[in-house]
Length: 409
Image (tube, one colour):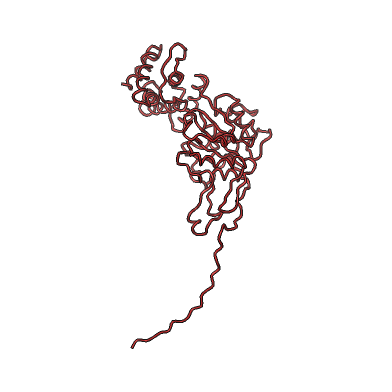
């Protein structure tokens, strides 16, 4: 027979209601952190092998110069700056210290431009470095941050897909789903970290970032505050915080800065090198630095070819030969100093691995063709005309003409 079993009554367990709304969380710490450019933090991804890095950060590559400057620097320093404005300018422009230490120039150009840029960072206005592609905007930005804060890595790379979270903050969604909005679930952006620590943040290619994302900087730069509405909190920038942005002239019209955002910046335009000799010096110096990291031959062994590359780029860029006698057509590319550095570095690699280690015309010819001819139809005609009317007739350039003509056929 079936047995009937009466269910045992169970008393319901009282459940505390879950509070609605943001949980009270301690605000993020804003204590300043000190970054030693000579030290390596083993906790930072990749930092343990800094000596093996293909391109070390500026604060590591030039740690000895920064240390020497700090030791000799007796001038007033703004809050949380590693060096005084004078020492920062000396670090970028180069010089010799009283103890004989030589500071290599990081930027070759008008001194006033660097002084204005450094002074801007000592005020409450952000700095916008503007110029055509290849005018060392990123390079100057990195070295400014390294000299001022000892850390150039607080970087936001601007692209058409850069989200708002890259400038403000994001969330660790595992923590967010498990525990709700909290400080532990918040992922700070480089800008937020710079605000909290009184350091220098960098935003590369600002005009490539969508306009609505750009405008998240307005409150940060004007109020020096980053609201966190999900927590009912805010991060206030401490003294020493500032921001360097870069943008190039070729991006005008892609995502123009709003007038409200533009007012928050002091704009410094970085020009192309004024003279051919200045540009040759820049290319030689940078190629030599890159070559050392790649075990390539010394750039001075090919100084004649460097001078030729620079001359070709300047004449095509200016639409006029260096003697001012012949007008030439300009191709669609920018033919910047950075591209000249790339062409010469590629030529040195060819000379090292497939030649006798000496830079010659045949090593740079293909690189020049690739830099000049961006539009296969229009630029090729311009290049051929320049070869036949200018290069062919120039004394001492016969080998260069033959090499360029051979790769252009």
